[in-house]
Image 1 (cartoon, rainbow, N blue to C red):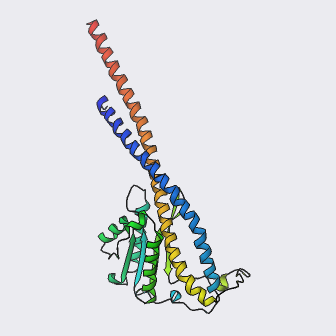
Image 2 (cartoon, helix red, strand yellow):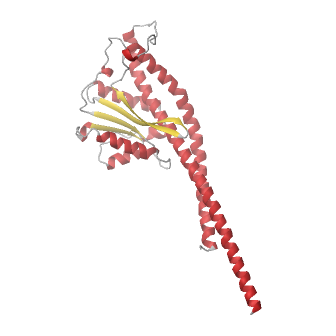
Amino acid sequence: MASLKEVKGRIATVNNTRKITSAMKMVASAKLHKAQTAITNMLPYEQRLHHLLTDFLVGSDIESPYLTVRETKRVALVVFSSNSSLCGGFNANVIKHATQLLATYKGISPENILVYPVGKKVADALIKQGYAIQGDFQHMADKPSFAEAASLAQQLMDMFVKGEVDKVELLYNHFKSMATQVLTHEVYLPLQLPDSSALEEGAETDYLLEPSREELLVMLLPKVLRMKLYTVLLDSNASEHAARTMAMQIATDNADELLQELTLMYNKTRQQAITNELLDIVGGTMA
């Protein structure tokens, strides 16, 4: 059995750790509230905008460079993670699935696989695996900015239109609830629209357009694509803070349980020591 001094030292260590995890949980929870508000406000707007775009495009004969489907010879992958750890399996899941996704392009030479990592953890992991990293986007992971997201979106759009990449994909965690983050893989470019035959009859809205449909789409398509990338950035950011809040809550609960066990052990050890001392005293008087 451990000595009283050892048990007391372990109790002090666990107490200190608990203070840290509890403080980190409070900080993550405060950041989560702000991030959750941002994605809750943005997501319906982005989804409605995409719905309008779908209504304008489905069943029409309008052509757009963002809809062009080509043989995939060069691909860009935008992966979202965090800059720091202590957020459960948040980063590990993204890195694992990014590795699996990149492995599906084994028929493409490595120099034709462009990786855009938004977050230090996935950047470091993919560099170790030998993939070429396109730029530094770590700042976006901590402080989501529409200007920076729009700049990256414009870069990807320009590359796609010029034929420098044939496909752009996104991999990120979707914030479903505080306890659930869903790893999501989407094709960003070319734009994927539902088949007009699959739409419900009467689902299409009859819009009065001013100016023409063509002019609106010229303005709307880039806006939708920029908004989509910013929404994904907010989504990933909220997921990170939710994962960290849950991880720190679990760590704090585990510390509480360990403290109870150590306190019980300390009391038993102390009681045993007192009993041994009494036995020694009694034995000495009887001798």
